[in-house]
Image (cartoon, rainbow over all chains, first blue to last red; front, side, top):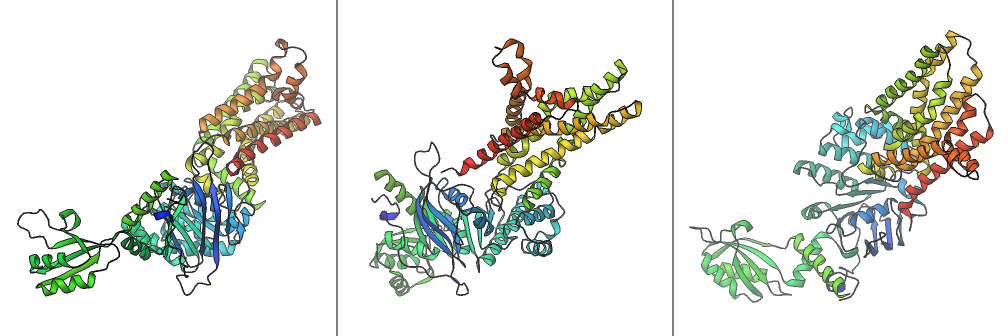
Length: 357
Length: 236
């Protein structure tokens, strides 16, 4: 396999991307060019010659296993670390050579939300505003705005150290967007939050990403599906996929055949028999209880099935026709391909790739 | 400049978020007050010299201890990464933190002023040496603080920073105490790097350019090393 990594040695996809939001002016805000970073003493580079561009109006989900190089990439973009090779630009400013200018364009929230615990929320935001050189009048208005946006207006007088994890996260987000940066970089902004808090943070990200650029890393793949306009998967310091979230599952379907879930009603047994005969269908098995089916449960006839199809076929139309003709009713027919599967396929193939390289 | 002031103000306030600053101030006042009043009661001598004489040793402890958290704490808590995501240079951060520590030193020294007032009320107090002594003290404390900041920039363990800083300060303090046991060739060198030696004339109210130069260059070198240590994360 080619040492460039990725599934079958390729980064998916090669075709051009269009800007997701028609409102955006389509400016390139982040340009990373063959950027590498090796830590002293480490055998393999943490980031290995990666290149990508991000435009305004894009919300880029940065996914990959732990230690894949996500955080390192973010630290380089925020000028905390310098690239060992290649270069990175934010709004046209080199993050190493013109780091102060680049940093002015970025709002950043590192992993685990490190904030000064002894300050109140208001004091902290005010301090960040001073450091960002916001004029006093603007600063007051901005603090009011971000407090409302992040729903922390009623916590402004509290010490940061006394806030719950969810509120601390919102304060971290508030300081990151205080100066209305062109680029927002968030390292695992939703880890450790409850579902409601995740949705709130997600809304702020989406709102912000409409005109600006957002890059955020996450382990939670369904989150990528709802929040991002684009996914960048990284493994062993290399980019293994760069696509819209929907494209990724379609890609895996093409590579290994589709996995479909079918739920039948009425004449289930006849329906199943008919389905098994449809060309392209390889395996039909009842879903177990943990998968949302009833296989193995006493007194229940399994009605939900998992179907694996041959590579390159899409027998969905045939399936529904066959089931109906056999006297069964088709209650559900959906794709079972989760982003997790895509992710596993991408990262495992890359591990195989580097073993051969 | 605005950045330096913002950092210094925040750091200075941070000393008072926790009891540390109060503990330092109280302990410092207790020790210096003890030295001052024993002299007064035993020898019936109202004099600032015991205080000034002891200060180099006192600041061996206090310098590194008030500076230990400045970088080590930020590294341990991850806030340093956040700080450097703001548009500040490493220099501004070092200078701002140095200024904050010197602010605390100024508070500590300022609180010993009642001693001077007391001495003045008891007899004739020569203002020259007292003012010179305080300025010298402040400058000397600056040297210790700079050493402490340098040590704090090396590690994320506050206590390690304090001990390293103390060790360096103590070596500089002891340098001219061992003159009788070292070869005579080394004596001038040891004197030249000694904290105490350079403070002797200042404590008598004599301001010598060489002593000023010593402390200023010590501050310069240590803050430069601190800045370089921070900068090293971005070495390619």
